[in-house]
Image (cartoon, rainbow, N blue to C red; front, side, top):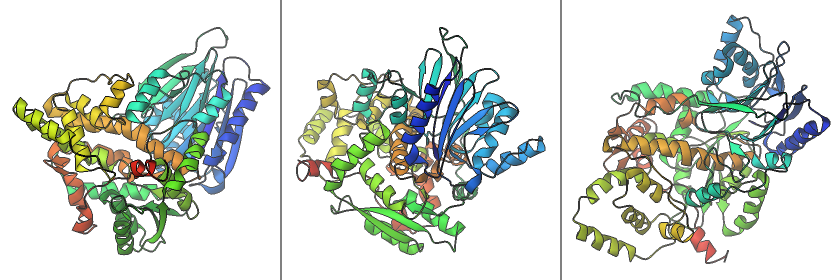
Length: 562
């Protein structure tokens, strides 16, 4: 993993352009303390800070093809680099060095703009091709790695984090009111928007090509292409086959742990992270595997006991990180200052504390992100199915039920029945996607109205495809720009690589073939994945009540943080 940046111009590069890129690399140093590089030509300067995971000393960036002058920088890990290396060798192209990203210039020269479709892993990549004045930016299918850009007359600048890009573009600091309204509703900035009106974000699985004119008064031309989309709803369903899935998932874990550094596990005690721990142990039976878990003083938020049980079962070295109210004020300021944008997920702070502790032991951790989105793990999915029946109740019964639910007192406990029921009745009668957006909104509907924020428009869905649409929405928006933003910024603040085996492309494509009943069966979530997990885990762990990571913020705001 790295921090990458660059400026490409239509005119000749001057000392000021190089100074801007060098300044951005300094601001991205926390993401890659192992190596720094800045390389340019007559019209472009690209920079990189490297966190060495694969290839040791041979992974210096930027990468330059000596014949064509093509320059490449990449933030991420290319899991299928050896297969691509063999392919390039057959075509007569030798790669310099053994790092995973060393294959990128050759693959681009072989495949052209479509080369990103061949990549497996996590990546945010930039390619400058001086032969036709083209800059290519691309982001991995799930959006695990970020990439921002700013387009101006005769120039395109890009960077891994907003703070670096804003520092290099002094005229790009005006805010985007629509993006801020979306942030208040969903707690994150969904691509292509950022907090700033003149700075955009490359979307997951998006490839953008910019052509830089040699005349400063001509517009930069660009073409966007989405090179992949989760195929749920567009591929034939097949009967669930645990034997077919097992090698797919094991290979995902194997590829992501095929590295030259020590790795560990973020462990909650839930089925997703516990399954990853079990498979990782089976693949690395003699390795010292550290696990890192969060602890809370409040029992309804604390999952330390379950995590300890899993760690003991698989001989993991457990490290506990206690989270308390006094950690929040200073850490929030540090995080926003570091990355340049807010994130309305209070779990950002505990994940940052967890990453800080993990970085003292390892350079790479595996986490369970993506399991709920692709296998159907959120309570909103069975809730959407229940809503169909609720809407058939007589109107007076629904009104009586809603009145009773709204009088139910609030609680500081974690995701209570009263909270879930209030959101449920508020969404009664709404179109499924609009209802789902309301249920997952960051702020209550009444407060959004008082703030003058209108609900985002949605496309109507037929009942047969409802689950597909809801899961795809969560994968492409709240996961990519919320949960993965949290994990990336929290981990990279401490130069820690985070990977998610459930977001391996082959794992996602397998999940897309599962019939709806294998993702949500009445009130049961993730039935297929839970049956698979029973191969590795005891029933008590597999069928533990889902909790998810959150913090007792309301109690803290009325208490120690008041």
